[in-house]
Image 1: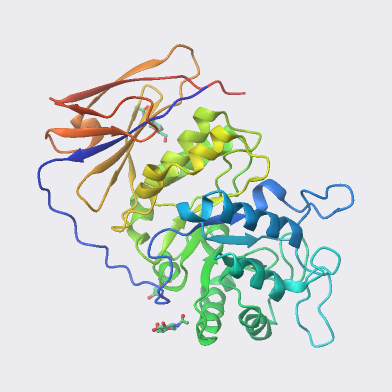
Image 2 (image 1 turned 180 degrees about the horizontal axis):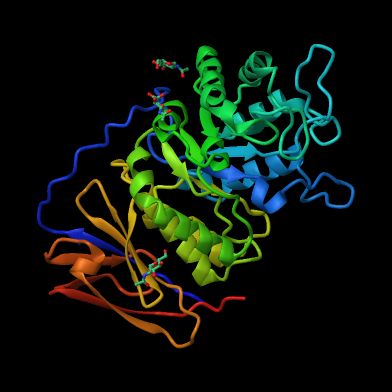
Length: 399
Ligand SMILES: *[C@@H]1O[C@H](CO)[C@@H](O)[C@H](O)[C@H]1NC(C)=O
Ligand SMILES: *[C@@H]1O[C@H](CO)[C@@H](O)[C@H](O)[C@H]1NC(C)=O
Ligand SMILES: *[C@@H]1O[C@H](CO)[C@@H](O)[C@H](O)[C@H]1NC(C)=O
């Protein structure tokens, strides 16, 4: 097991805020804070056999059921307002007018009706496509049909498009993704634009990506394991000096979905993902069966204090500011002058590890702080932190 201690260190004294980043951003008025919602992919992948797996297949009933739960059980109220279907929603062939067709068995009412249903519950509707000849799972892609497809999405009243990058020469992305974004803009409908552009390139042009996309997948797909979460954390830490420059209101790095509540993470590991993703100003896109999620995982996803860190209006992506002894400290500066700090223990040896963190380790000014534990394991405390902070963190019980 691994326990992350996640504290908000609130400065009582006034500090100057850094100026907002000056990266040119996509000007569609969307994603001023990182998008929040639910996506099918990680949990439901490409399950298409609705006879065998009626509760899990990619279908309008899965989307409707999840929409209902999001609306009724507090997810929408907590900020999770997008619901999106990922790959495997299409028929294998376009219709006579070359338009995309949703799978007739699994989406019998069609996408427009489904979007209407989602809108009726106060959520926004997202859908997946791919800037190639085929999607990653082999369904028809947009390449060669960009205009007609964007028009179709606008007619269906789609609010969010995730555009993947399989089955195409990735050198086309530098012009292709912006061109597709221009078409989206020309519909006049504000459509959140999620790009997979950098995830497929060795030296992505983030200046252009941040100018053309609201969010972008930087790295590999997340999988249902602690190893995967840890790999993504390490990759973001390693590349953080470059990446943070491009994050800000309207444009975000995307370390991929939250896998909280599925099969691979312990509760403590789930808390780590939620905390570190929020420090990274990451989109919070759940991918879990909300009908069967265990209450302790639901509680992590609905933790309003941690969501508030993620959604901080300053929009400054945080950093891994220290690592040593197989532990890490992550820090995000917030708009009100406070800091969100996560202490993560990656050790697997046994017995909680006592971590002494100096103000230098935490990269915060020497001040008196009011400390609030956002997971509420400890009572809120007002401590006079002289020059270090001590915490005990459980080791991870890795598979
Ligand atoms: C289209 O782009 C223009 C210029 O950047 C912007 O002002 C406008 O809000 C955009 N419209 C939509 C629907 O994205
Ligand atoms: C990256 O994109 C920007 C903005 O589109 C462009 O000005 C710049 O030349 C590009 N950089 C490279 C190395 O291609
Ligand atoms: C910090 O992490 C990096 C990998 O991200 C590793 O190479 C380095 O050895 C670590 N430093 C310490 C002091 O553990």
